Image (cartoon, rainbow, N blue to C red):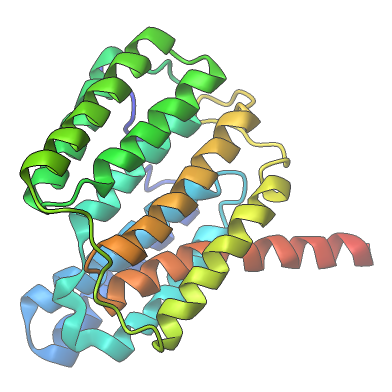
Length: 269
């Protein structure tokens, strides 16, 4: 049984808001470029940013809306919006849910196999084994926590073996051709490193899973660290567009800004 899906109930105001915002972004992208596909990509960017953010920081639902607001900076780069790697973003969401357990359901063998299959597809489709390395990190995190240890150990070993096969018979992992002077890239790297530290404090806050039970804070933090590691690996070893960088930057800043606002609010109370 697949347990990594999360429902979007339109009767909940925040869910209705993101559906409306996604549609508005679609219309805006379409009108600005007169290209229907650009509208779909901009709308998809808004939705995926929200979905990714609520899995990165599940304890604070409003941080996802801060991230959505920030990701509208993609309007400044609307001409390249179609280069956004939507599949990679959905893959990250799947990996995060497997690790953080936010759905509140027991991780199944099918979940692990589907995550592995998606990872292998991306790894060979993109000719880049960094996806396998991120998967191995995720499985190592789950093993350390004690979640389905035999299954995650086997999946991790298989992914590592496939990475070795790619190393021997495909091109080597090389640094991405990004501009080291690009301010967005530099800011993303700095914010990712900072977030990895701040997530220790952010993850300490009480969090409920989708079943209304107390979430495992160890798994939440593990997922956050793996996301930060994945972002850094993608920045350095994958050919990401400026739009991809802005999405990840928005997700991380959304969480950090919301957390800082809460701390200021609590200090003034």
